[in-house]
Length: 218
Image (cartoon, rainbow, N blue to C red):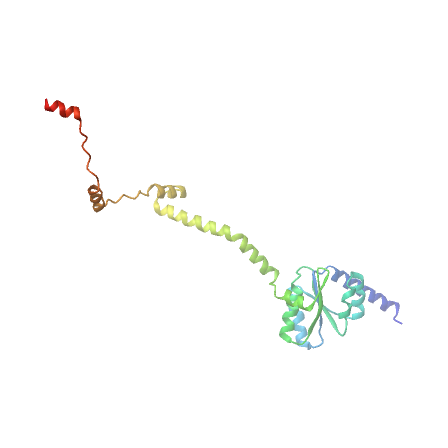
């Protein structure tokens, strides 16, 4: 039977892991046994650089943690050696980095994961791994929001340059000046059409005045 000291240490480990995993945005559990020392060292260093936590833990401790944070249905993955990668800030970080090094080394496999407290499958982990990192997504969002503003600024700058070239002080003067400078199109006369119109005109019919003729006869 374990001594009181050992039991106390286990309780401490369970509490620490519970608190960390409870606040995690996402977790990915793996079977790490295929990795050699060099590969494991390289992967851990990359995880630390990106801010991803990574721990190898006993299944008995993980089982207790699952019970305390409401992930009892995930206990079926706790067969054989198990490691967990998790992040309390970026929900995509664990899937992205774990899948990256799984594909690079081809030495370990995915067991399952958790996203915002919900259990996710290995297929869902694969899909999440294809989503760009948060800084990339933030950059794309900012570019999308700033595009209309930057386009307007470029257009106004071009108009200002045109106004300067035209010798006017404001863009409004440039626009109104261009409008007033437009001359109406002159109507083009067609001599042939006019001649044809004259020829088709019917001669005026002379109206006879009987009274005038009678006076003339007298």
